[in-house]
Image 1: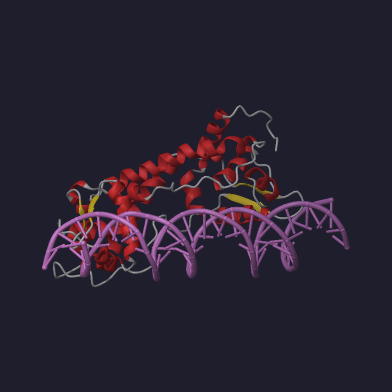
Image 2: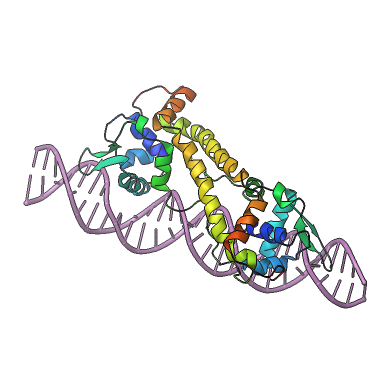
Length: 140
Length: 140
DNA sequence: CTTTAAGTAACCACGAAGATTACATCTGTC
DNA sequence: GACAGATGTAATCTTCGTGGTTACTTAAAG
């Protein structure tokens, strides 16, 4: 959803876009979009203004925004969850496995983010424009 | 949990281990372990027998099992979920974004699995043995 | 035939994420 | 200053995935 929203903002090239408009494209509720925009604001990916005729826009060029930044802006929780119930400390394996796996999972997640970082929002836009024979520049 | 279970099996070096024993180490219910073992059996990572004095054991050396195999054996769903509600097809972005992102996310997931593949179950065992000053070979 | 352990179905509990409603707040315009 | 249009935000509900629990069936070994 976050990438979708940012892609629409990139498509509008600097124009301010309302949460209602974005919600229509993503097919969800404007409030969900606003919550999402709050995360993106904190990460300095978008700028939002209140008031009549306002809305959000990208704070940088799509060329300078990559998917890893978007991922980190939105995904606050770890992909690999630590177990809810602590392993049995009396078991020599259970005693140390959690900490060991934490390091390995962090490495795997880092590898994934490195791959995401290779793609910019502009790349996404190019792929979207190429794959779809979408006409009508500013249609809703 | 899956790595934990396989680590215990590796620790026991070929001995058959019951689901009750594994459950005690992970601190969960034997049924949960059995469900997990079914997935690991399908991927040929463990062998299980019924009956008195039976249980499960690794089907290969821990050196020949890597974390990516374990991940794939257990994680049947995609890490990146496709949106529940289809984007607005009338929007030029919404029309094509899902397919575009699917490819990018598959690439990111593949990068993560490649990183996981670098670590074998034997490596995990070494790390566990090194980090914990765990005495008592076959203790529960 | 009894014992032991896996296979399996059914149901519950919990948490995460999105959807929805309602209301407060800000901003530019008249 | 009032109003209109937009965001900020809280509260609630639904849905879904995962793990936990109980209970029962099936298979293997003595």
